[in-house]
Image: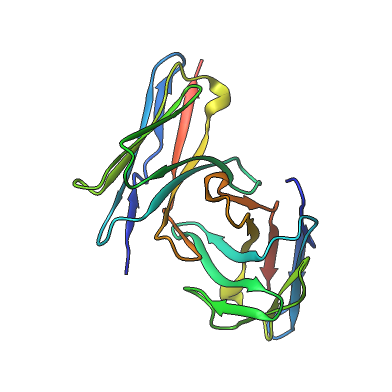
Length: 111
Length: 114
């Protein structure tokens, strides 16, 4: 079965820097890869989707890359702010009906 | 979140009792999902539905059943709750034909089985 690895250790960065989060997977490349944000006590919120034939996707300060050779997606937040502190989840969409989620990486942005 | 409500938000129940969690949507989407989230495991799919009376199992379906008698409601039942089912349960919907908008999740139900 598909395994998804996200760094379990929290990522601590200073405000204004770029945060880079990693999502690695095994086996087959998904048709789509999604990123979500989750705040404590809340449900995940969808951020971005990237397709297997796309190398990069941007939305405001967010950028996602997808390398099917490395079986990896990188999620970047530029000019990070304390309000970006949250847990970020990646999810694989194989093109069927369900998503498989990674365990998430906590991001802490200090002023 | 917009159009999706979970109830109750919190519940404490005793081992061996049945429990039903409700997910209600106002947007008439076919696809609805139940996930549980636990420390160290992340979000894991329990069951999902692709229409009225159409459901399928997910990764961790043992001990759970679901029903979808109306498009707007997706019920998750723990027939006989166990302590291992203490978790946070999330419902989600997917907008068919609009994959680029991802899933929309409810606010979750925190269930404690004592």
